[in-house]
Image (cartoon, rainbow, N blue to C red):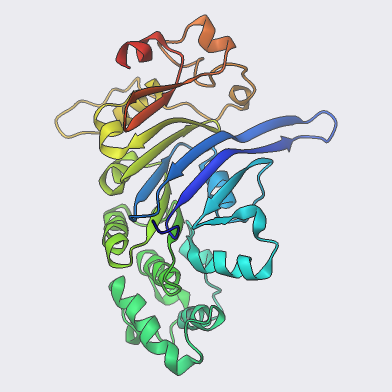
Length: 328
């Protein structure tokens, strides 16, 4: 088994303090997450949740941009707490590449876009000089439906958001990574073009044998692209498993709420259905953070932490509801 695509998360936690140093409130943005995905085949893991669920904090920790308060992450066989070593940090950055939400913030308006592609190839030793890097850059651009001739000499403002996001993906591919972390990569792209980017992930997974961690609030694209899905709520991973299993037979009440919020052809929209707004008090609950909104919550749910319940070999749910026990 190759470790290049492997992901191991062990009791990963990140806390922040909001407000003053003395009277401030501690928020656990990512709370004791454990997860393991193999490295023998590439996969796409979608991490789904609303704003405030902790998914972007988790993405930043996976990229080594933010240190955990406790716990461990191993990506591609490298533990993130080993990244103080320069050689290991460079190896990690080569194997784990990011794609960020806003493509226009990824490129300086004063630099030509192709300069970033060549710098990536040269800085990571993919090619010894610019001339040798040209076929590498061209291959990456062709993989996302562009060419060096189309990109060369142009500045970011000469591209649409969708085109520039495809350049970002090409840049990530240049190092031939094992894993790409994509944080809301279609959020700032016109809705009519979002599936073009999502389709690219499926294509590139096989073409480059690369795994994706796809951070999104959009369950419809997650359903289409994913092998695995993790549902997050207020820092907790509340459901995890095979995408088809979860989305066809959702186990957690919150997952069902998310699915019911997606408009479907032939079904009337429920005007009374709303997703919860960010409420910092929910982070402080001693029991289930969803208990105040859950129609199946019991007193145990409100006072005791949820437990992991297996609903089958490819699905587990973080919940104490008797309804979940009846499904198991």
